[in-house]
Image (cartoon, rainbow, N blue to C red; front, side):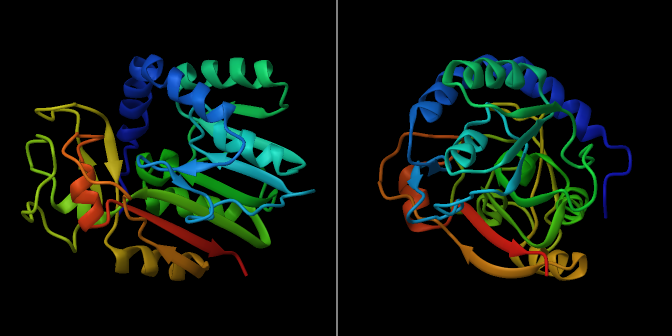
Length: 260
């Protein structure tokens, strides 16, 4: 079920290194925020509470941290040790600069979130907003998150909803529409490197029941699941999706799971 070659790791590293400059401004905006917002629609943490208000004394990791604003928000909530890992040196260069600028101490690792160089049971809380949640093979990164967590530890993540993938045209043209272009049950690896519009890297997603089965097989207990709704309407395309589409159907999904 996994991609044995790990080709996507190298492909995605090149993609994000080539495009890291496009994410500097959004990283700076999010670092300047005190209150977290999530996803492509900027939904408030009160509606999609990926982060608890208090992380005092906890060891945390952000899987696929990008410009590492998620880690900054965790540090501001009192986390004791904050580790961010990302596949892109370009993204981490921005992350390092912003951490120094804001005076927040973080541990940043250039590496693959499917194979994190941390010991078993070394963290209490793991976060991924897009990051590993869509750019890593779930059959690899979810068991890896389980390995990293101590008993009682939680993994929370937000990424693309499977419905947004099955309604994406096969040639990668945008925006997504209301036609089912690909099958639901076999959803896993999506290669956008040759997309007609906005060529990208290799993404991953499972159908909802596939996520549930994976969590059960790994050993996670599902605590919550949400499908955030875009609060606005409009025809402007954002990451292949219009607000009108995302106001009618779920474009994103959020999961809260716990290691017993």
